[in-house]
Amino acid sequence: MNKPVEWEAIEAARRNYPALERWTYMDVAGRCILSRATRAAIDAHLDERMMNGGDKEKFFALIERARGKFAQLINAGPDEIAYAKNISDGLNMIATAFDWKRGDNVILCGDLEHPNNVYPWLNMRRYGLEVKSVKPRDGHIPVDEMVKLIGRGTRVVTVSTVTFAPGFRTDVDTLGRACRERGVLLLVDAAQSCGVLHTDVRKSNIDALAVSTQKGLLGLYGMGFLYCRREWAEKLQPAYLARFGVDLGEGAHEATMGDDNFKLMPAARRFDLGNYNYVGTAAVDASLTELLAYGTPRIERYVTGLGHALAQGLLDLGLPVTGGKPGPAVGTIVTVGRMSADHYGASDERINGLYAHLTENRVKLSIRRGVLRFSLHLYNNMDDVERVLELTKTFLKK
Ligand SMILES: Cc1ncc(COP(=O)(O)O)c(C=O)c1O
Image (cartoon, rainbow, N blue to C red; front, side, top):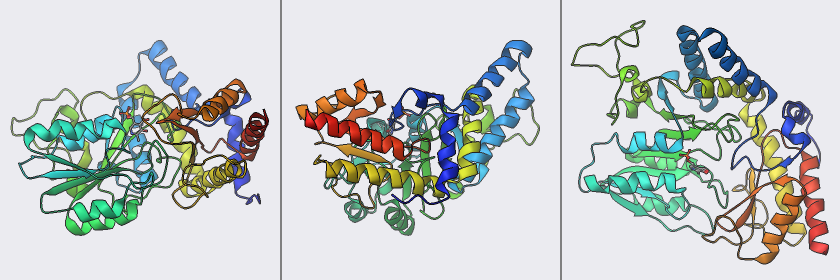
């Protein structure tokens, strides 16, 4: 494959990831590996806590700095970003902030969503919400079916930007346009795209987006953010409320108690609760610096190029790559085999054998819903792709 010159800078990122000395790491869809810079930021935060107790003003400055970087990453405003502990936290913030009435409905594709984007909605049925689920089409979320289902009672449409299996990209732009025209909130679960594929919430007409930091954002577990577009956030009422969600004016202390007739913070800030995950924020603040320096459009082009080369190579070896020849729905996740309900094994013994062979040879990947899942990020390169193809060829000859 011809390598554009700009790839060389991204390839240099590899040196910052010591795990690559041990592993051919293709499992960011499970969790990322940490860079030396991110580890150093975590250590610096913990050293400060251990040696000096820590300075709250500095911690708050860190929170605002990282909030600004999250916003920049997805083309939002800082006020449109709230802190969350993971994706389900962010999704539930939206699901519980509506004043549901009988006759309201949400549209999703239950078979392809992670359970964490299904249960929050099933839980709202007790307030009268109806959950309308469309069936997948050849492993894809059928956006056109969702648009057709939008009716008078539809308040929310929710999809994963990329499914965790089989890893196809959803046509969010088409859905975004349709939802915006109809005044319906489009909420996306960006677990499998944010940080590795370019996200522009304005261009895609995304109203709310939930993400965690341990995958494409190259940070830790127990940390994430929720984007909510100002116009929507200011119509929503958070189910949980604490001091940081209340507007007592700039500079008011965190322990100040205001009037009982409180005013909510602007936009998504109203979803912030009490103290933050400072160590998780220190980690992602460092990794966001790296992601923003390369820029997600560049990262997307680079990593998608690797994904397509891997998919094509596996197809050439005769393997059942999901979706066949890589097209626009294939990004940075490549899956092989037939989908089933099983998370840890495939129905095809050959696929299980290949998984074992790759794992024994220090390739890190996963099996989800019966398919082998290879997932890539900026620290991967063509050598990784070629190594996996070589190992696969050896396995198939056995
Ligand atoms: C699409 C998707 N949504 C959600 C999650 C996990 O959600 P949470 O951050 O709440 O654990 C995953 C994790 O693999 C995922 O792939």
